[in-house]
Structures are given as structure tokens and as C-alpha cells.
Image (cartoon, rainbow, N blue to C red; front, top):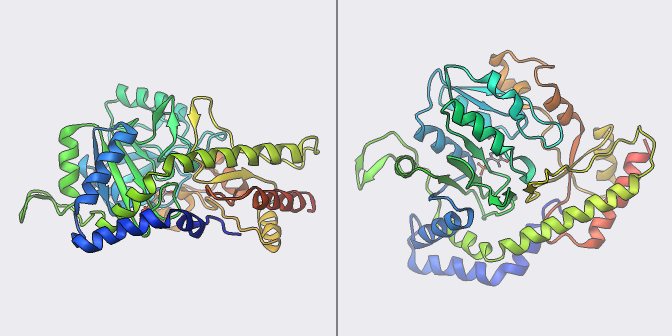
Amino acid sequence: MEFIDLKAQYRRLQEPINEGIQKVLNHSRYVLGPEVTELENRLAEYVNASHCIAVSSGTDALLVALLALGVGEGDEVITTPFSFIATAEVIALLGASPVFVDIDRRTYNIDPALIPSAISAKTRAIMPVSLYGQCAAFDQITAIAKTHELPVIEDAAQSFGATYSNRVSCGLTDLAAASFFPSKPLGCYGDGGALFVSDDRLAGIAREIAAHGEKRRYHHTRIGINGRMDTLQAAILLAKFDYFDQEVEARARIARRYTTLIEDLFRGSDESVDVRCPYIASNCESVFAQYTIEVPDREAVQAKLSARGIPTAVHYPVPLHLQPVFKNLGLGVGSFPEAEAAARRVISLPMHPYLSDEDQDLVVAALKESVSVQ
Ligand SMILES: *Cc1c(COP(=O)(O)O)cnc(C)c1O
């Protein structure tokens, strides 16, 4: 069994994907070919954003967003400590400081109630992460940002395709960064990402930054990066995008089935068997980039599942403020108790749109044995 079965997806979508790749090979416009513009238009329309800029990765989408806002030395950006390193890495790379705010223990996303006290004169942006595919609490976050005249950047690397109050992730904030890393809900065959921008002027700046700060050919007005998406990746994404809604539906169905099966299994168990299924807020539809549960004695459970042939992953075992690279921030154990508690207990189960009921039953049966046989 695979944790995320990309081969199963390729087997099903082989024809349109191969066709898309062949078209690019035929016209040979490997950089900024027509597929890139077509993809940008389709993605912008899908999330209802004014602008989409296809870039080389989710990390570069975040980086370009911060560069476009002019974030640099001495600035602060508010974000969550419970995320992949890229979220805080891009902030530090620009000489700015990530200012962490603890999470809401139910959703694993930044706790909006704790944001105001983290805002200082140096704050330049708020960058929530929509973790595991569920949007952060953007109504509350946007209201706070408005009061302080701060832009909001959604780290939507895991949430492209999710909805929030019937709006779509990446279309909720001033800027949003999606990742098309192969294992994300919409994945290409290498690195890829997209930056979504609502403001026309800011979008123009971001587009230049993503292509060497070039205003027109060999005329450079800003310091930028080589951050363009390859045409081949755009063609692969276009082919997959036709099936994306079906896949999002399949993910939701599989997630619901996991929750029903797991809750049934542990119903009436004694309190020591504290297994928690994902909590999805009533105004949210998660795209389930991960199906992540909480278990007691996580390391033991993971080892037992592995011995039974069930692949799992931990997103993430070490919160960002405790990463060696951020030692300079001086934030020790206990700084963000909710993120630290989550990091000790979370485990992600196999999840992809082609996971069969039989395999899912195997996972759940193995989970039952792994959790109760302590
Ligand atoms: C995957 C991910 C990124 C980085 O995306 P890449 O495309 O791998 O550069 C950033 N933030 C979060 C939360 C992610 O999960």
C-alpha cells in the first residue's frame, strides 16, 4: 500500500497527461509556453482571484509574495509554528523574523484570538497556513488584518480546492500561495506552484519578481528570481485539472469513511484510548491533503502500523520554533503549548483519491490493533 499512490492516478489519467506532454514537446516552448498562460487563467477562474502567476514551487510563491510586499531586514511576519519549514523559511531568508502565534487545537490552524497581541510596529503581513487542507479562520483573521492595515497571505500549499464559507482557498486573501508538489492535492510531476493576487498593481510587481524583475525583455526594474513554472509542468497540471473536482470529491468521501470507521472502532473505549479524528469547522470543506488523526503513544502506534505494512507520516514532529535553525529566536519548549501537544500526537494515514475501500479497511483494522495493543 502506498501513502499517496501517484502511480494509480497516472494509470487513470495517462492519456490526457501524455497528450499534454507531447504537445509541449512538439511546440518546444519549454519556458513560458502557451500552457502556462492557459493554466493561470483556469486556476484564477477556479479560485475567483483576479490574478494567478504560475511559479516554480509553493516555496517560491510564498517568497515572491513577500518580495512583492517589500518584506525585508528587520520586518516581522506573523505565522503559525505548526507547519512545514517553507512557511517560516522564506520569511527568514529575506532577513525578516517569523513571529509565531499558537494554533487552535481543533483545526491545527493559527488561533485568530492570539494574533492581535503579536502585532507590533514591525509587522508587515499575516501569513496563516491552511493546514492538512482546511482553511484557516479567515473571517476573523481578515478582520484583524483590516484594523491594522496588514496584508494577509494564505499559505495554501495544502488547501488548493478547499472551500471556506462557499468561497475557494486562494481566493480569500490579498495573496495566496499554492503548491503543486507531486503529493499535494493537485500535483505536477516535479516542483510547481502558483501565486494568487487580488490587487492589479501588486500582481504586476509579483509577475516581474517571478521572472528576474524583468519589465520587458532584458529591461530589469527589480531584484527578482528565476521562479517561472515549466511549460511541461503546466501541461501536466492542465490535464489533471479536468479531473480535479472528481478527485476532491473522492478525497472527501474517503475522509468521511475513515472518520465513520475510526469513530465506530473506538466508541466506548476507555479514556486512555484517546483517538481523535479530524475536526472540520462547519463553514469549511477540507481537501484533505492529509488525513491526520491523533493517537496516544504515537511513536509506538506508527511502528506497529509500519510492521503491519501500513505507511504513515507525521506532519509535523517538530514545531518550527523548536527547529535548530530557529534557535536564534530564543523560543524554548513551552512557548506554544498547543502546537507542541499536536506535534506529539498527530499521525497521517494513507490518503489519496484512489484509495480502495479494501485498503482503507486494512488501515483501520491495523490501527485498532496498534492503538489497543500497547
Ligand atoms: C508543501 C508546502 C510548502 C512548500 O511547497 P513546495 O511546492 O514544496 O515548495 C509550503 N507550505 C506548506 C504548508 C506546505 O505543505
